[in-house]
Image (cartoon, rainbow, N blue to C red; front, top):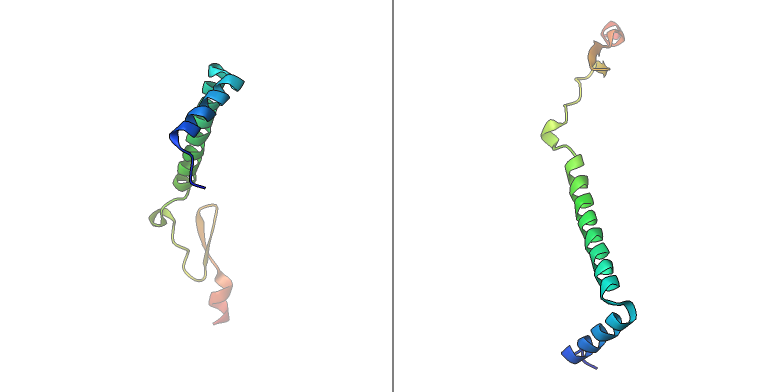
Length: 81
């Protein structure tokens, strides 16, 4: 029970062409190619959307917080010492 030989593939190709016609087969293969291209672009976009670690800002020091880009110091921690 080996694989398909060249003659098997030729017979399958002829049957597909008779059933669907040459135009329909080319449409199906074109849609298949577009799907693969779209999938590859989606995978590339996913990798690009994550910023590198060097672009992520470091967290503020202890006792400080940022709100809308402004750094604020928590004065209550200084009074408790």
